[in-house]
Amino acid sequence: MSTSFSRPVRSGGRSSGRCVAAALLVFASAWSAAQTSSQVSIGGAVQAPASYDLAALQALPSTTQTVSFLSGSTPQTHEYTGVSMWNLLNSAGIVTDPAVKNDVLGKYVVATGADGYRSVFSLGELNPSFGNRPDLVAYAETLNGSTQPLGSDGFARTTAVGDMRGGRYVSNLVSLDVFDSGSTATGTGGGVSGAFTVSGDVLHGASFDLAALQALPGRSVTVGADVFTGVSFWDLLNTTVGLATDASVKNDVLGMYVVATGSDGYQSVFSMGELDPLFGNQPDLIAFGVGSDGLGGDGFARLVVPGDGKHGRYVSNLVSLEVFHAAMVPEPAAYALMLFGLGFVGLLARRGRARHVA
Image 1 (cartoon, rainbow, N blue to C red):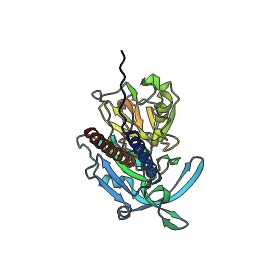
Image 2: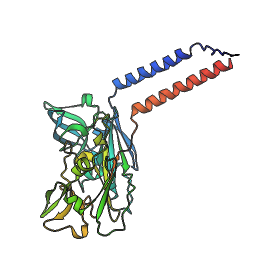
Image 3: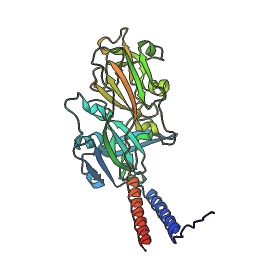
Image 4: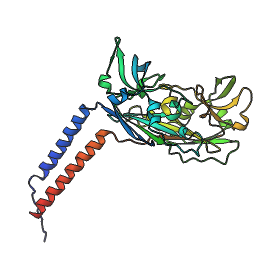
């Protein structure tokens, strides 16, 4: 004997679900249509998180700069006015450990737009003592001799002075968040290194000794009176081991960074954006020789960063390169949709309980 059961019909159940879905869709569409920023928050590893609207930015010391870059294949030149990105971050009190030498070099900042687009800047490239890049949080542009708001670019956007393309010009800026590197690498007790490993978000993790480096295409850079010989830092990462990027994420490489560690545990962060020839195009070198000699006490390999003021990012006795994607920062749209969705889930649960009791 078979027994059949009929499912009780709950009038309005599917209808309610469709209403929720429709409402969420309308909400998401409305948000997408209104992704124009009106304030930027400074957060993460800072002592005094803060938010700035246009008036607050305009009250700070300003700088005007002219920048040129490619947008797609179109050359662009803009004259922006804004606030030094470094000064804005530094005024929030970047959290550092005084027991760690140049601890600020082991951190990075993620610039995020209202649509979730993001780009990484290493604090070493921004710090006036090291990379000294005068990047801005810009809030105005000079057009035909008149200073005007940024319009569709939001109330503020980042600049990336010297970049070849505009990928790190994050429009509709909503946040700048400082993070520690997240590195798990440790030193080997100091002393002269004989090999380094490349790991993390790469296609082919590898180890390199002197012979392996010398077998790669070489190049030289001149710093003062010294001529260093080695291999391109970018080419080693992008071509030799390969970066594990997500093709579905626009300019995913700009959300990545690499941590260099020396045998004594000394570390420095480099953003992929500063190294990538399409963007910052820094000619940083993994050097294995200077003049006609080896590096001596600096190990078989060290990083050389032409253009830096102090040489804090010249990581000697290299033992590790770790590649990471930056920490995710939920954009306002995600928060809003999550709260909206949770509210509807709660409403449906209450309605369900009410029907069950009835």
